[in-house]
Image (cartoon, rainbow, N blue to C red; front, side):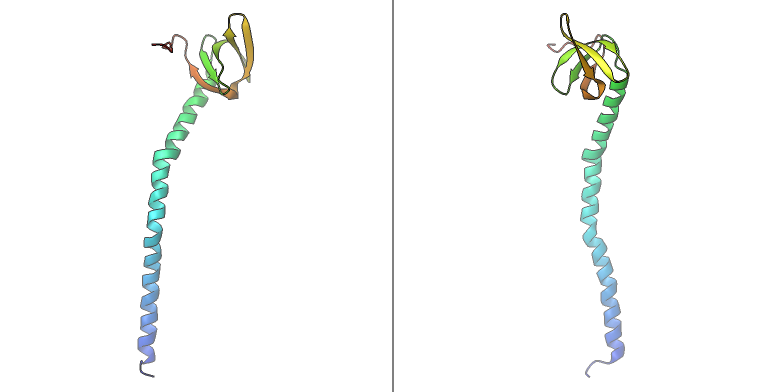
Length: 113
């Protein structure tokens, strides 16, 4: 009664435009957090996994390897899926390549230096 219908319709349209802008602004912190997580956590982990997969694929006789179970030894024989690792003089263990956690190339730096 006190407000004409034309003013009431214009006020509703203005409120809806501000609502979509407020929705975008409220989503902005979530987007920024996701971008930060990608560059600080996800991307470096993907690069590390790619490097490890390349090292496992190119493992050869004489390399020192560390398995996921903690065994440290020298590679004596390689296969498509398996690696034979000498953990002590005369003691050889057959290990699945996928369980290798680290590969140190032949002639690498000793652990105590």
